[in-house]
Image 1 (cartoon, rainbow, N blue to C red):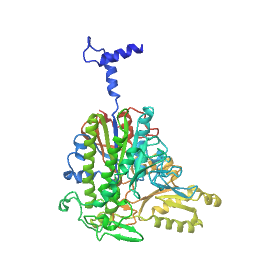
Image 2: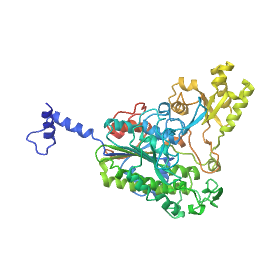
Image 3: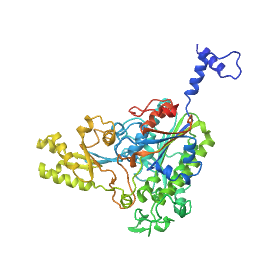
Image 4: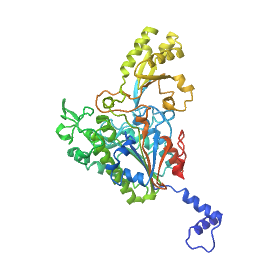
Length: 560
């Protein structure tokens, strides 16, 4: 029987046939074509990209980067994060697991552990050791991620014969997308300028990576400083070159701090006598370096040569620049114009190596960002600052006055109130009463929109709005007893310059989603999609199982 079936398949595949194909033969051939996978899937996450950066800088972009992805690919223009908090760790985890922190457990970049009183890092792992440098920057792994990723599922589907590699300046940007079963994840060590990894993945860096590190590219890039791609006068989409909303570059060497006189171009890094290579992260050179190593990984590991492989790339430099300069600076515009050139370089390389129809590429962001609050206020937009220290101090005073012990507050961390269960039991305090009392009191503060107690979050099936996002971001074993929701337009940021992110409001949740390459048609789609829909859609396109806790839905319009 097997011999007959093989003969039939061979017969169908020949160009000259003695008789017309039967319907059964046509179905077999179509299925084989339908279930084909791309040679390589490239997932790109841009750290801190607002969707309006596409529109704002459109006329300045070249034709081979963002414009090519939109003009020849599929643009899901109304894609949102459907949970709080919108940080790098949860963002990368949610894209690749197809679910929210409620299930995958990455509730922040860091979070508080009630039982130990410690704060843990989302990919921190003391049992893993650094490979590639003599420091602790490689003591990392994906072990705190509870669920599988689409990258895990693709490896499962190919009996672990395929390869998955994660690459990012940030460790969490490389580790979480690549999943538990990754063949490798590499990130940048700012102290040495090397790309490193962890013994979770390997016992030594591969030869190609050692060769790459030996090129000493960070040293070369750092010495060039940062100047604009275009004449300053052409950056008409941004504020002036030096404003009060922007932070300056500074470096500490031997206890001496050197700073720029003003946040203006050109930025001459070597004048600041920096120790290490952190300035590479905070300039377009970080994107250049990330692209360099991504291409080196494709070649060094011959990705897509035998199996359907996956390369996860996270461009971290826009986040560093956004935090320092805000969303309206020339520095922010310039880093996107230069990133556009890196995307063009990467896409051109992929098309030359594989052909457009043999690789699949998607691009999104891990979160967006709000403009600098003072900039908003100066333009008559409601905005301001939110202080966790003030909330915690107010709560301690309230607990001392009304419950006779301020230590009932065990911790206030990332808008989560953790109560001391030992003291609650000792004093025989009714849990529902104290959480409701605290929630009501904190909600009266001017900077607070409202609060949700643990009982409200778990017992209510919120379907929309901020409360639904709080529910989706709440993991029962990792979050606190009460979640505080600030008013819109407020940020917690120690500096008066730059900006941050983390809220459930649209300035932090609205991100781009672009698809290109393998079986991707051209189009712009304004239907609402959640970031969790990416992994669900990829599972259909890659013909593998859906990640085990995926809550996203397939983007059907993309599949038609």
